[in-house]
Amino acid sequence: MEQKRIKIKNLLVSNEVGSEVNVKGWVRTKRGNKQINFIALNDGSTIQNLQIVVDVPNFNEDLLKKISTGAAISVIGEVIASQGSGQSVEISATRIEVLGVADPEKYPLQPKKHSLEFLREKAHLRFRTSTFSAVFRIRHAMAFAVHEFFNKKGFFYMHTPLITGSDAEGAGEMFRVSTLNAKNPPLNEDGSINYKEDFFGKETNLTVSGQLEGELGAMALGEIYTFGPTFRAENSNTTRHLAEFWMIEPEMAFYDITDNMDLAEEFLKYMIKYALDNCMEDLEFLSKRLQEEEKGKKDSEKSMELIQKLRFVLENDFVRLTYTEAIEILRNCQPNKKKKFQYLINEWGADLQSEHERYLVEKKFEKPVILIDYPKEIKSFYMKQNEDGKTVAAMDILFPGIGEIIGGSQREEDLDKLVTRMKEMGIPAEDMDWYLDTRRFGTATHSGFGLGFERMMLFVTGMGNIRDVIPFPRTPKNAEF
Ligand code: 4AD
Ligand code: MG
Image (cartoon, rainbow, N blue to C red; front, top):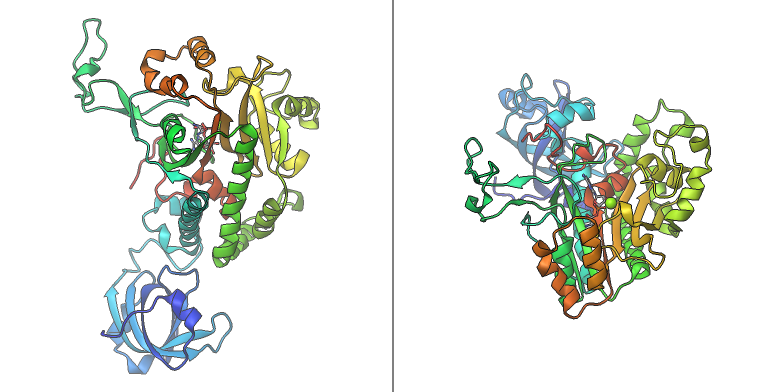
């Protein structure tokens, strides 16, 4: 077929009735009778299917038989004004070529609604459903928006290593990286594994965060951000945790905690606005999907309509609150008094669980909340110690339906305070000399944060399970595909 192919998205925009075009894609459905067939064709460029009208007597019977859900076809035909509702145009086919058949007996996706659980097991094919193609088009747009936002602001994109020789973050269990023979590793005299013989001559792991290296960049380039995969072997089988997830970590010299909060709020709103401006068709589809899914629920349990929710977050200031204020609210709230929380809040110092975070965001304020000044005991060693001696300049941003979406802080720039804190927390300073050099030479106020990309995707798409917003999720006991 010599005719140059046009993508369905472009065809629906250009709308040139009377012209001849070539479209290629995968069949979503085929229906009709002995006279006329209608094929819904999708090529991934848009959520919209293009209707192909087939005048059956003009085509070879065997050819038409091969066209079933999932088959790849190429169609040449004339653009005609659409008879029915929906699209403005459709194609009256003159030539059809079957590029690849999909045996209806074996093809797992039928032209009906499949559950998300079923599709998770068919993750290699789920891109071909409307829901997942919408999610992954939005994922692309969100990644693009991240780079656009920081590039416009003069931040530099920095690639931090995935293999790391330090476990400084202590953010959770790490995945070991090793080329030693697992069955028969070289041993030290005391029976422990001799990592000196390992590939890097030391124990190495997959990174849990690019922050520490990011700080080195920020203390020279001024403002940097990382955007890459991170790995945590925490055994949390929840709808919010992945063992491999993507994180965006900006790090900025000369920013204090307030500058940090301002940047984070602006960044989240930029991404939401980008989705509203560029992904409306997909968002509308996902909104309908969500409403459909929640049909059975009581009104009080239904979530806010997706697009309305995105606009709401965009148009309202986030609530800013100290940890101490949050504890007061939580201690005196109904679910705590009536012992409805799984973890009751009794005293200052308690770590907040997602039930508490969601109470603050969804019940108390009904807005995103930025919590600051956490007890130092429940936060990382590198966070700036406040004057009160009890709290650190940490900030967590809590989102409706999600809980924590961002974690960050102003960093401790004072060498002595930092080293003392590391000793208290049992972090070996000798392994971290390179990090401490930023505090030895030209130290300055600086701050940063980490946004979990998939948690942001959950919020923007309204999907309920983090496994459904990353193409191939890695979770405990699951590394399929
Ligand atoms: O709060 P966390 O652990 O912060 C850091 O890693 C810092 N180094 C960030 C920084 O200051 N540069 O993680 C940051 C965010 C969380 O708020 C959450 O959105 C996401 O990463 N996250 C996860 N997302 C999916 N699965 C997991 N297992 C996650 N753990 C954290
Ligand atoms: Mg955190």
